[in-house]
Amino acid sequence: LGHLTAETSGGDAYGIDRIVQRGSAGTNAASLEVWLDPETARRTGAVKIRYHSTREAIAVPWSAVATDDDRTWLAVVDQDNRIQRREITPGATTGTMLEVVAGLEPGERVVRYQPRSHGDEALVEPVERGTSERNGE
Image (cartoon, rainbow, N blue to C red):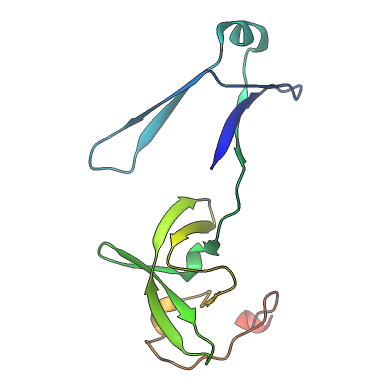
């Protein structure tokens, strides 16, 4: 997936000696404890922890994602421009994007906004990437 580094305000980067994750049962909350090797910790003071991604992933905007109970799904547009609701396995997240671990292939098209507003087999008119019909844009 990736790796973490500790970076000083001067831009120097250091490896991390150990990472300990503690979670709370039944919640999505967790804390992360990062240990630098003792010599690095003495020399650096405050550091920023950065995550560096080392692999490609399929990601969709959160606005395209719907959930029902324990099911996460997308409205996928097939070759005939018809909607197919498809269950996915979600992965890592950012503020605006969700990684799709399983259930979607590279290049497949999804309904970007309000996936619940389209029923299965509904016919849609796709909009090219980079254009929008929302708010007259």
